[in-house]
Amino acid sequence: MSAKHLASCIFCKIIKGDIPSYKLLETDLSFSFLDIGPLSKGHALVIPKYHAQKMHELPDEYLADAMPIAKKIALAQGAENYNVLQNNGRLAHQEVDHVHFHIIPKPDAERGLV
Ligand code: 5GP
Ligand code: ZN
Image 1 (cartoon, rainbow, N blue to C red):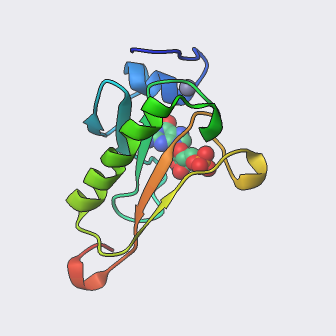
Image 2: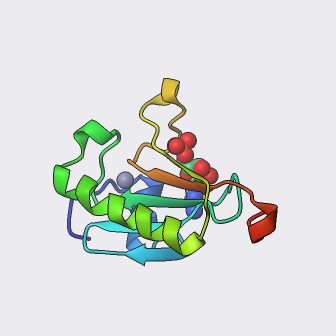
């Protein structure tokens, strides 16, 4: 891994392969995988390979690398409707303290995304 990580962090462990995940895409700076508790079929996460709890603590190059991956995942899923969410802090519903972007396709019976 190219940058700072935290040994006790589950997402840092996923990046290192110490915890298994269903990997989607990986670059030098980012890693993406399916969410273990999907809100809909295809619910994915994009995380930087840099341990920061909140988005404002993340170096710009990691932020810039993550967004095109979110775009690729959304395109690959073929969902016409989807949410990209990013929570910072407990009051904002952050449960895992490593920056992550959710890509959540909205169910669409006609396209089989249910
Ligand atoms: P948050 O509420 O922090 O924005 O979302 C954390 C997300 O991480 C949740 O949707 C949860 O299902 C997911 N998650 C937590 N632990 C794991 C894990 O070990 N593997 C995977 N693939 N997802 C996880
Ligand atoms: Zn981490």
